[in-house]
Amino acid sequence: AMEAVRVQPVDLERLAGLLPADRVVRLEAAVEQARAAFGDRVVWHVNATARGGGVAEMLQTLLAYAQGAGIESRWRVLAGDPEFFAVTKRLHNVLHGEPGDGGPLGPAERDHYEQVLRANLADLAGQVSPGDIVLLHDPQTAGLAAGLRALGARVVWRCHVGRDLADDVTRLGWDFLRPYVSHAEAVVFSRREYAPDWVDDDTLWVIPPSIDPLAVKNMALAPELVVGILARVGLVTDGGRESAVDFLRRDGSPGTVRSHRRSGGLLQDTGPPPPDVPLVVQVSRWDRLKDMAGVMEGFVRAVEDDDLLGAHLVLAGPEVSGVADDPEGAQVLSDCREEWRHLGAAVRGRVHLACIPMDDVDENAIIVNALQRYAAVVVQKSLVEGFGLTVTEALWKGRPVVASRLGGIQDQIVDGRDGLLVDDPYDIEEFAAALRRPLADAALAARLGAAAHARVLEEYVGDRHLEQYVDLFSALVR
Ligand code: UPG
Figure 1 (cartoon, rainbow, N blue to C red):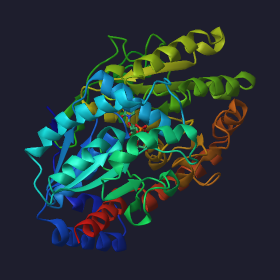
Figure 2 (cartoon, rainbow, N blue to C red):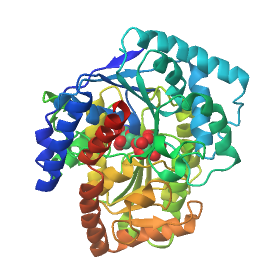
Figure 3 (cartoon, helix red, strand yellow):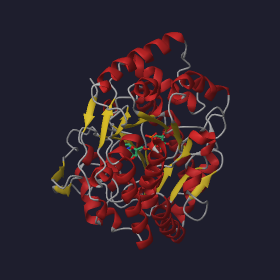
């Protein structure tokens, strides 16, 4: 059966407290509009995982605010088997223009995809009422559109991935998905360029993702707490001291970061970085398109000629068993470990791989938060990226970010102002050169970080996102 994810309502007032007055007024107007246009309907979100990855991250926070504003919102997670997720991961890869495992997307795959979604639809049929609004996320859920329409629901499909230029590989994915997506009444992409040409302009919406500054992932943390958290989980050493680390969970209840250092599990046998060295950090799912191996190579290149203040690299991702819809995670992590073993002895001690536990969402979030805040430089060397919430999160924290100039990353960063962009994601030398700059130049790092924070507040905070949803849903039910 489908999993129902419960989200505690959060009062929009809290978010409003961060915003300039004109934006508060606009947000209040949007809430009024929402109540009038679709306040009597339930808004459903369906996706493929309750935790790990950008979609789950956003649903957690946007649903909390929608609930807080009195819009009844519910979240269901697909039930699928490994074969289903192998097919949908293939779709995910090809929509990014990457062949992935190169496996087929033919009639047998289609059959299985439809069969799994039929079972899920049966589950939803008992819950969704005619007139309800259903937002289906990503390729995994597209095949639910027709059945939900038949139940009288109003259906939107949102695609979180894409590639700036369509090619023969992306077409494989779209050929598979088109018969399903065509039943949705509106289709949402993070960039205009991602929409295949058969999507009608009047059904196409462009809505970039957002972050919630008040989420556990992004909330302000005192510097002592940052170090305390990282020491507690063994991600940095602090002379053997280890204090209890308490924090407030999303729902306001108390949480504690568990000690993970005895298990040694987080660091994948690579050992912790010493205290007081600058850290270069990339946080990503273990997905080839995030190019963790390339980050390692680029870091090694950057520190080969210049010690760069003794900088270390931390590559952090989720515990691989924790992300249900990502069957490639374990393989990608094990490839990274293999790559690490082949690094020169001198530099190997400066590169660390970490898996962050996923069984407690808030604990995971606060560890990621601390790591991003502690970082001297955050990198995101993706080979393709629909949007890139890890970039937004780091920009919000005022970190200098070095990232590939592609996908949603190029919308978030103006090169040289809010961060540094690398033109060719396959050019290790260019990446290394960009990485050296903020490490070697503290004034540059500070200037980029300040601009970065301001830019996120301007463009990528939840109010803008919620308003766009209100516009979309209002248009849908008009
Ligand atoms: N994250 C964790 N723990 C980890 C690793 C990652 O919490 O150990 C979080 C991370 O903080 C971020 C999210 O997972 O919030 C990852 O999001 P993102 O960087 O956006 O990547 P994807 O998971 O690949 O998300 C997909 C798209 C991406 C888009 C996002 C939302 O690939 O480009 O931004 O969906 O549309």
